[in-house]
Picture 1 (cartoon, rainbow, N blue to C red):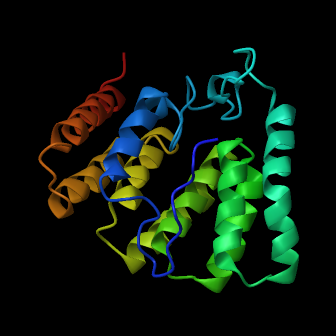
Picture 2 (cartoon, rainbow, N blue to C red):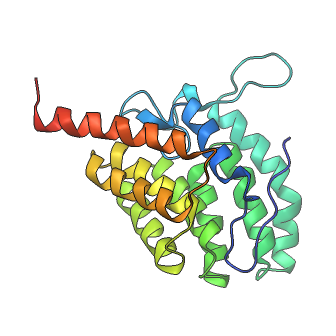
Length: 217
């Protein structure tokens, strides 16, 4: 299994800086731009738990079912859950468990463990952004946006939160103007020249959608 990023205890990103946009770009390839925060579906109403989100199993190349993925996550998380019983205030354990469930597309469980971690470290912007991702996957668009707004109150320049805010506004709320505003703020506060064209392309597509809303066929 791919090693999860190390957690942070000071509210900084759980992801290395060079992966902030890289992760987002990979997610776009998986369909984010037409469905959901970090992996999208084919339409705004599509189930984020659809087979398009499933990962191939290592043995047969077949897509495991959600039940199988949950079983795998439960097995991986079990030693940590046992340790958590002895250390209930260990936020690093909570975050690691949350990542196991998120990677298995068990977004409800992942959200709950991220939430427990936030009770211990409410100013952790990265964890709050991750929880927003899980909430959105689980169908709670408004809850996801609320988490991102809290994250941006703590750090208005956080690139992951700004990027995800734009995606959710565009695809979860059909709000291209809101998406454009978030991505323009992203470019303003995180002007990485190598990633700028990607965000600019997303802004251009949002403007096209904005035009289609103003002038429907």
